[in-house]
Image: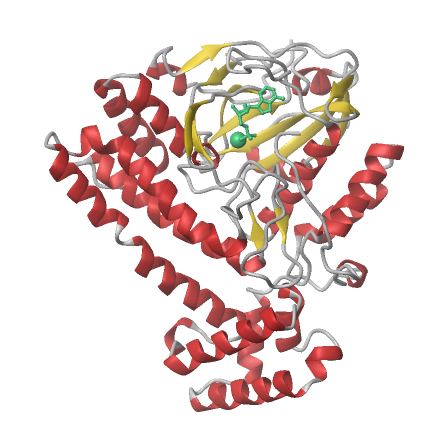
Length: 487
Ligand code: AMP
Ligand code: MG
């Protein structure tokens, strides 16, 4: 008998079985461990030994064919607003193996995604395609490298089974690691389908799990405020790197403030506030510049779900919730402005009206000239050779104006550069590269190009050798590049 791989310690099940369904992963035909995240495994303190996995027990466990010691698998219930409309959802193709306690005493959900049907699958098959799981693995690890809160990817196991989508594809199971999978939509589920007492219990549970130092006099208001602060932090970070989530439904907004659900997301090349990649987002609801507004809207859904326990008098409850929700615009604007200022080299204590004006001028010019979002800041940082629009008069004049302002405010180009290096990634997962490396794995099974790209993305602020090839934007912009949900 081997020692346990995960240090499981269940807490979610104490909520009672109206919050989830017990369900085991459905075994797959021929599991094969394709990718394994050694550094994450180490961080989690796992004793998964893939180098010496003679009996294949790692792939057996991470495919769902065998249960890890201590695992009590379940599918969680949740609801959500999808593109503005409320609906019942739940883990339809994901199964929570358990909650792992790391050596640092942090609690992490260990979840298999693509592990077979559950009572929440509706008409879905509970499975995932290899390509979609590779995409999630690559981009979530890139987000982590960028310093942005995110779900992590521990492993991908191919199943040896086909998955039927528009075309027949190879199937795979991803092991997803998150602080928890509690979503805004989880609270909407509890409020809509369970009792007020359940809502109270769930709120206290979530507050203790994610915000243990928050005030507890009014747990619902405390939770709303903490989630709001984390969302501001998260969205500002997305805006910093040009990330478009693509499907910010309330079921895809984590209470702990982590990015997750990597279905239709993509990074913007040319700066365009109205940019949308998702093929189903025809009205641009989740366009780049709409993300803060949508986060605010989603938070109002959370507030709405919490109303019954904010105050017995519902009018007063609404007033109290509004007080918190109304913090969002100013908090976001402050945080966004500080972030953009840092991207052009001005620290927090130098946020003058002139800096704000300088940012506006730059963004307007970028939009008019379809400037590459990532590379424009690298131009300001003098990392890339100035050619094309960057050798033109607007940009050179703007740089001079910026330098004068830096000097006037007691800073310098050199100091600015240091600050900018921590804000402006040298590389992002550009769509044409993402597609190229995914195709290469999907078509030939060869991981060389995938791993090379992954390695660069894991340290996106480091000028490592060979990075240049990933820095060039696609020649014709993003053209008709589109992404898809739930593949
Ligand atoms: P998503 O668009 O990924 O946020 O998923 C929305 C809902 O659809 C969730 O309840 C998912 O669990 C469910 N779902 C997505 N894909 C599948 C699938 N292949 N089989 C079963 N349920 C799915
Ligand atoms: Mg989802």
